[in-house]
Image 1 (cartoon, rainbow, N blue to C red):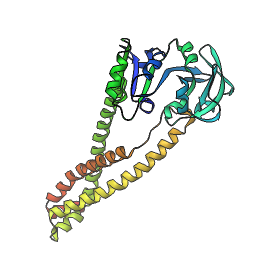
Image 2 (image 1 turned 30 degrees about the horizontal axis):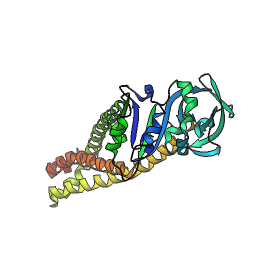
Image 3 (image 1 turned 90 degrees about the horizontal axis):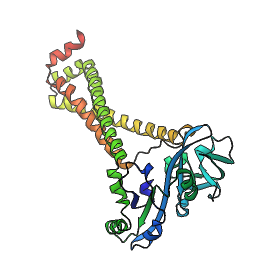
Image 4 (image 1 turned 30 degrees about the vertical axis):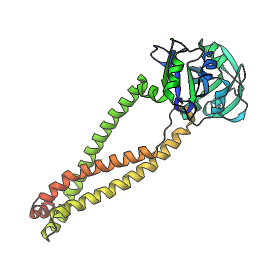
Length: 314
């Protein structure tokens, strides 16, 4: 959401989380006058129960950010009105109005967003959101002109107030504590998954090769070299790995599609497999397959052919 909205993010200085940030919307007029600034928007991020739904994201936005939300029907909100994400709208009993905190708003439209997370929310004017959450804005998002560098703009915005923290979007994402925790956790989970997958492949291939002892023994007995036997096992393993990867890729995309369109998840859980991620997973999978296959393959290749042939007979 942050990356699609701008190149620079402005939050309150010295806060632990953007949820607690409070930045004056009036700064937008000053920021727009800075050389190199293309556009500036303000955003309030909050959460509230709506009817029987325990938690719904609430976005208070300035008028120039409303274009981010593609209307399915209705019109963009004015004061005391909201537009509702399609997954939320489908779960509402009263589709004409909703209560947020102690205020009631008319539902003026239904929207879809390219950002799955935003589909599970409601959008209202930043003025109304400010009254609910008692703040001016959670953050300001600034877009820079293509022919201007980011750092000079960041430095000029910092001069406007000592109460704000200004970062490029990329720098903010890299250094935001919650993102760091999520990234570290994903690395740990990925490592555990890789290790368990490797152990699984070694076990399966060991059992498979053990069942084919006589076949490999006969190959060695008729003069096939150990190198060629090992190579045969490796090629077979890679072919199995490629077929498994293709199957997993298509199954994963089907699961992501079902998750994305699940009304129960309200759009909060969403995922996609980029070409970069697909390539990384392919390389990791093939590496895992090769490492998993080489241990039992070398063991079979070095074993005396007589022992291999007699293995199944015993």
